[in-house]
Image (cartoon, one colour):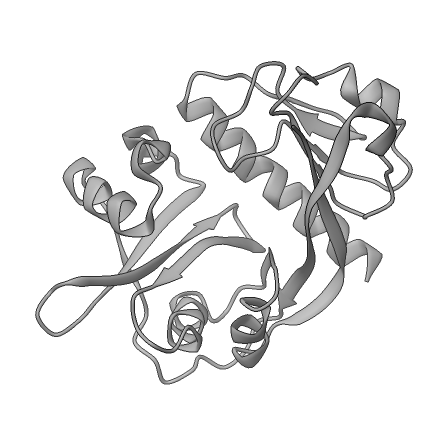
Length: 220
């Protein structure tokens, strides 16, 4: 289980680095953590730990630890409360091994800047998702459309296997549909990611299992 958590944390850190890079922010990665010295874009942490037992002071020295700072504590083993942080949320890392594809239709790639604007608006991320993401071979922005061609959901796959699943969203009544569609898109590769309750249930129903806890800290 610990190896699965390490793999998921590394993949997530790489995705965070890609997003920050698309905003002109250069990150740093070593054995302890990924971090970015200036404030990350909304919804993204300033640091992601990559092993248990990271020194808290050294980690915070790598980021702008003032108000608005956030840390993804990948092993839920830090206590940042003494540094002015509070727990923003707890979540679970998830993993799905290569499996027979579900019967659901796979998602389709977003390939143009104009389509990305529509995707981001439907997702709710607006300016967060920039065209540079479409040029990165490690990233696949994926969409689902209804019979009329209306965008109804999507997700992001990142990395080169296992693939990290993030930014899953749907406008349908059943979130399990979009998770099954993600699995149908890359059935022959392992998938990793994380989810919080109640969104976790949809991932588990699509064949994922939990591998360990994580925690996100925020400084108000």
